Amino acid sequence: MSADFEYTRQGRTSRMAALLTAIYAVLTGAVVLMDAAWWLMAGLALLTLPALWDWYANPSAGVRLTGSHLYWHSGRRHGDLALAQIDHMRFDTRWDFSIRVRAVLTDGKRVHLPFEAIPPHREFEKHLQARGMAVKRSHFAFF
Image (cartoon, rainbow, N blue to C red; front, side, top):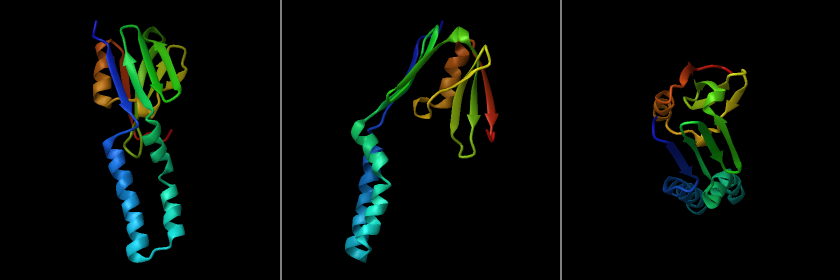
């Protein structure tokens, strides 16, 4: 049996801090140096509030794959499935090239894993297949 696989990511990253700092610097520079309308720049700054909240709250997301269960969490959401319940895992490539993962259960129901909790897809697929699980890929599906 393969060793447990665990993947976790945090909402607070240095990349996010650098990006927010750069955006606020550009908006401030536009007001000071180019005499841009402050209210328009403030409106644009409002669009960064979800990213700023993620950086402040630092939510955790991830998956854990054991010999018998698949666990996932994302912020306040969490779930688990017994591997015996899963018929196959489906990896869907979207038009924006993101990979969405869902577990198709033996009774036909589908359980979508949160996007932010998904590890790099090739590594995740390798660990799923090491446990004898079927993995199906679908490229550029509309639904």
